[in-house]
Length: 243
Image (tube, rainbow, N blue to C red):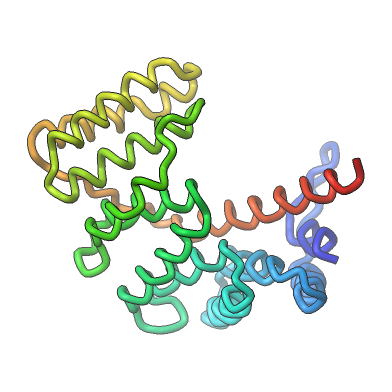
């Protein structure tokens, strides 16, 4: 049921033909999957409502599904709830509650969730939400010695967290490692990130912390990524079961 609902919520191109999504069918099958115990389907369905976002009702339904998913301890829903509280969707903003949900996400989805939470808390332009001290709690959960691009992004986050806490010497040290590691990555990864890495280094060298203003389409894009992550995770699980 989940896979059927997930696919009907997408636009699929077959050859030169684009098959539009069937939102109502997708919502029906995802809801049935969730009621049958596939609780991650609630988060996927919430993501579809956020992406569509035609009316306030969409955000209310997204919130209801996120609450059901969070009650079922679905880690993706912890992030979704944090973002809803941060942006005041379906209710007024509650920054303390947003940080609480983000803490659950950071400590459950290690290290990717820890990294995302630390970055948001350290670099948010919203002074009422930003919490550098809380972000500092998560950097020990990041595997900066991991192989590949992930470790470089973790180093970049650690540097931002130290800068947000006023420790600019440590920020420069970790950003130096991040830039050195980035130079060893594939050219495309290097080109996509080097400008931002260098800009942040310049800030830290001048005793300034980094502020990362989220783009206007951040919510839709993050929830789109979230549903894709859920779908790919479940598809991998199905493949593993059949091998």
